[in-house]
Image (cartoon, rainbow, N blue to C red; front, side, top):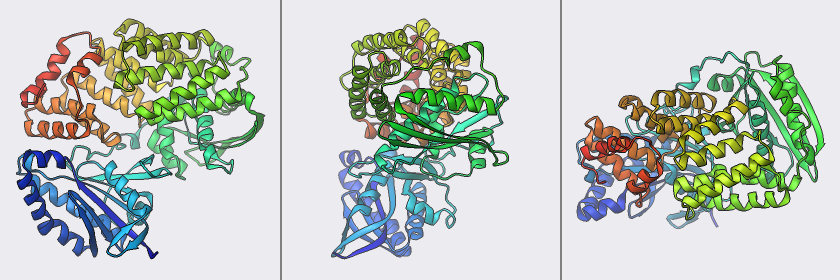
Length: 582
């Protein structure tokens, strides 16, 4: 077979089936004109060739990565102008993916992994946008005046490895906002501030990556329980996974003074953890240590790392913090391994991943019936499934979540995740007082717990205390700048206060993190309705239905536990103003 390296462009029309259903002949004619007047000439201008057309899809090949990306950007920019005066039903909008990879030549056609990745990147792209792989980004970042956002490693269908994704969208589209523009100039907190980057997996086995991630996550959790420290959440620290970032850049972007780096080597029942603390202002090392231990002592090692950092930064533990750190329990290594694997599944935040997550957590509990974190995480699974309507979830899910949270607290009343899960379960059961009490206790035990601030902020919003909600959710985002759910809930609280301009900017920021979010789009549609931008409301609504044809406002109303029934009327009013269905 003949092979060659090529830049591959994959594109398709957003909402094509809807456009065809509304006006088949007009859509096909408009698409043909678009090819004749814009797409084909631009591909030829950038020395590419169309390999094939597949209904609404395009596969093109370029010898130059720069040409492929420049062509994509020019097409998307030109489409914005072409669509400006068209009614929504006639606008043709593209998603584009570009990859650099090896292709197999089959006459005029091409196949292979490089093509498959390009197709997956296109599926991850936003309307009017483009997704590229890291291989492409390396070639174009200094050659084209385009701002790409790093969206980290993504698991994609039929590709057996994560793909690092970079995104760009046309200025003026729903997500054309720099998501880290605020964070880049964040002031340092008054407390010593730290971010722990993902520890390197030194086991020689890529399958052990989850274990190194789990160790890092637990060290972050342990550090965040120290009230004298300001600790960036795992979610934002892991945005740097797979990179070799300059420590000073990390400190600037996350608004911290110190960075913890390290590595993990697991071999049988033994584990070696190496860690070093770096001052981002100077690049100097403040402390470094190596630990060789049995896996059953892993919690003790994490406690030692935290103790060394506390000493290096010359901060003190409170009496209650010191007491909670005395005599750390041993852990069943197999149960811990199940917990770490389960947390990795939970972070995928998909319906199928939660099935696997539940099975692993049940295994952990079977191996160690007093393992509080396993019960707490299983309670979280129940809550997430209920809120999203996944895996046949109903009210019984919340009853089970409460039961599991209480089992976690019976095993360890000082487990913040257990109080967090208890707060979530009570919130969805509309017991807002109990939810607030549990969330406040989680924050008391873990003053840097962004998730607990997020839950407490949501509870306050549901209870009608919208200003307090905004403050709490802003704190959650400061602790975890990449926490897209906190961004979503902040937009919702701003919407509740009728601060529509702020809410719009916040919801658009959330779409940068979660471009396929239906919930964000329904709020944007209501915002646009309240501000008289009815065409934009209808556009966003069409995008929502393309993403989730089964979206239900009735389910939305049933799940959101707002105390004041007028809140939902205010939300629906925005949709009504744009003539959107209820």
